[in-house]
Image (cartoon, rainbow, N blue to C red):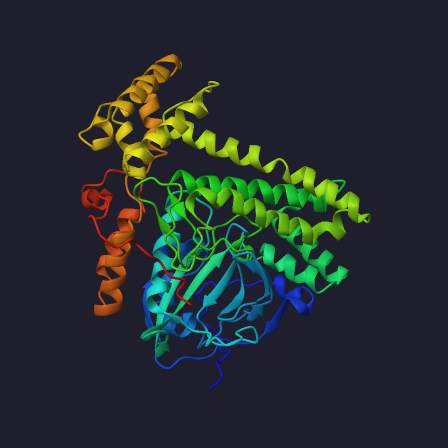
Length: 493
């Protein structure tokens, strides 16, 4: 059975312009998704659909199931599987969309461009030994966490829909098959450039770089060396992104170069999770045995990934290889300060500091050290500070914290803004709720085991307003109950 290319209802709102498919053919393979037996639309993001210029009413029920499963291809789409490479846990591999299909690029009413991609849509030429499919639990997990990051104001891919396929997926056990539809500013990765460089086709590498500049960094066309400037701008975006992750206790879990986007969005929500008790060595991923992608190592890893990007760009940066290396190193040498500035600025806001003092970094680091010693909850500690009063938590009763607390209050008094203004700043930078790991698992279990999506819907509703103390969200700020087993996440492949 081949998917039909019959025209969608005229009011569905699709406006495709597939610029990536006009790159050299080495960067993709044209093919349709593999059809599925009995698709059912189980989650649909109507708000995102409206933002994209789509008509939610025309994409519900059977119509949405057929489209978001790949059984029906909308008019104007040009489905492709993208080719790329990547360093996975430090080892280089030629990769590609082994279970994903880029349907096309939707133009929004405001003229913005977003990739529409299926995840779990069947085998492709890049699948290697995989089946190209995905299980329901991991696809729902990506939906929940990506929408949570969006609500927190962190650049991210987003989730438009999840359909069940009516077909089993065989992993360690038999699981329900599902397909996620996600949107992204683009899926151009550091690994895409590594792929182009590894093929040693200078014209293709230049075409990719020029396309990336035109799509995401058009102002760079006026630069004397646009490719060096591209490295600098990507570095700035990644430094800001990782700082934002860390300000809310987010741990990506699989920061391979194929999961480092040039547009600066968070992508791939396999083994990710949010930290409860503060510990810079926190690792949740079941496959990260050596803590390569631990919470506190994320800045170091993204700098390493950017170095791989720089290596791919060297032939474009300068004709003299040694000069190219020198120029790239000089640009990347700015990363530590760029990241530190972004992180410290965010931490100052979390502490209600609207101006700067020389000892602010020490004040922040002393707080984190104190939180680490007392196993204090990362999210709740900052939220509690906004009350301006001591609480009954073990941290607030500790003598070393009391001394820090008095230093912090004295620092607040030295700034020109009132405490009311400082508190408002804190409450807009410290979420009251995050997707607590046990709450996410609770929602996934209800959906996967009982086909009950109400638990997930309630969680998403609370997470959509993370900085508000909503009455219905009162229980969602609580950390998980004590457990003898450490929490573990999985890639979901």
